[in-house]
Amino acid sequence: MLIKKNIAIIMGGFSSEYEISLKSGNVVYEMLDTTKYNRYRIHIFKDKWVYVNDDNDEFPVNRDDFSVQVANRIVTFDCVFNAIHGSPGEDGFMQGYFELLNIPHTSCGMYQAALTFNKRDCLSVLKSYGIKTATSFYVNLGDSINEDQIVDKVGLPCFVKANKAGSSFGITKVYKKEDLQNAIAVSFKEDDEIIIESFLDGVEVSVGVITYKGKTKVLPITEIVSENDFFDYEAKYLGKSQEITPARLSKEEEDKVNKLAKKVYELLKMKGFSRTEFIFKDGEPHILEMNTVPGLTKESILPQQAATEGISLPSLFDNAIEEALKRA
Image 1: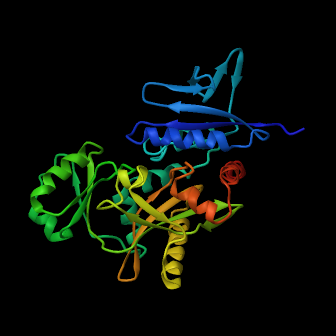
Image 2: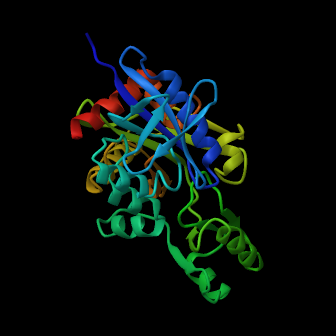
Image 3: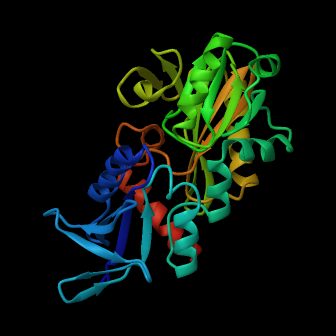
C-alpha cells in the first residue's frame, strides 16, 4: 500500500505579492495528486504562520520544527512546496530555514534565492561571464540623487526599479529628467535599494527553465506584448498584455536565448523552477532578471509554457516534489 507523503504548500509572504502567492498556492493545492499526497495549505505572514484547512480553520505552525498540531495529532512534512513570491519565499529566508531543519523543498538553495532576488547582485555576477545586460545605475536610500549623472549613464527613457521586489511593484518608466525623483520615491516604498536601467528597445521574452526528470529543461519561450508602456502589474495580472507561446522568434534568436537561459540556470547552480526575462537588442538577448518562484496559476507564464510542451500542471507540480525528495 502506498504511504501518502505530507506536503506543506507555503503561500502568502511579507511583500506586495502576497495575494498572487495565495492564488498560486491554491492552484498547487487543487492540482496535487491526492492519491499520493496529503496536502496542507500553510499561510506565512509576518504576524502568523498557520495551517488553513478546507473549512478555513487555522492551526498555528510550531516554528521550532515546522510541525502542526491538528486535534491530538502532530503533523510533520515530507516536503515543502514553495509558492511564496517575494520575501520570505524567494529571497533565501525560507530556503535557509528548511535547510537547517533538513526538510526538502521545491525551490532553489538559499544562496541562489538570495542572489537572484537581488537584481543588481545577480546581474553583476552574470556580467562577469560575458552575459549582456542593460546599462545600470545604483541608488541606496539616503544617497544624494544627481539626475544629470544618472541620465549621462543610462540615458532616457530609463527604468527605475526597486532592487528586491517582484510583479513589477516599485517600477516606473521615466522619460524626463524632472520625473526621476518621483520615480525613485515610488521604488523606495518597496525597497531601500534601487536599480536604474537603460531602456532596451526590442522584443521581450520570458524563458522558463526547470529541472525535469533529473535534467535541465528549457520550456517553450513566451513573447510579451504589453498594451501598456511596459510589462507592468496591469499587463502581468489584469489582462493588459499578450503572452504569445511559442514566441515569434527566428530560429537563430530562439537558439540563442534557449542556450543563454540554460547557461544562466546551470551557472547559478539553480534547482526547481525559474523564469528569466530577456530583451533582444541588435539581435542579442540581454538579461533583465530571474524569478525563482514564478507565478503558478493556470494563466501564469511558466504553466502556459509547460502546457505548450505537453506537461500538465499536476505533472509539473508532482515533478517538483519528486526532484526535491531526490535531492534530499
